[in-house]
Image (cartoon, rainbow, N blue to C red; front, side):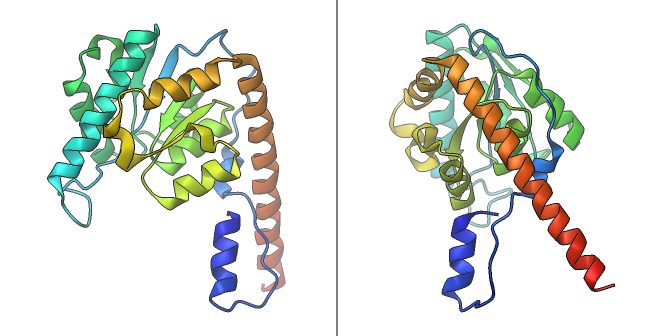
Length: 231
């Protein structure tokens, strides 16, 4: 689903032709007909990074640095701009618990809401479509936001997130998760980059959404044809 995966296959000796296709999740495209004049409604997802209840290796100090960094960054954004922050989870209940930990540390928590329930794909599409901007950590929160032509900022906890943002030409608004606690201005800086020409940001996101949808559908057709050949 990305050039880096194709390069990996080549590096381990695959000789056949390798085609890069869109992630099947992009076939969940939801049409978006309007955008706000400025990004006010901000959706946020998080992960239990190095948390003992989920991560393969527990490092509580790193988890605390991460949630404190997220809280300070979201506080700085909420103090600078009149935003409404909605936390939601693509993996429940683990990610929802993290968002509650972040919210509890925030000074600007009055400007936040946590959706504390298990969300189906259609629910996630509705939520991302209702936001002006999504700050995503989970890859599929970024993908589903793009499916609804909602601009994104990434907190990169895994190379697959970094690879997606590189594919989308959005490296400028990608923040390594290990650096989140080093400054409280990461998210505000990324927000300002997108908001500076909001109309252009929304137009580019719409084009990206359409392109990735078409690539995903092309991949779906390839799968279908391959199955037919083997029936």
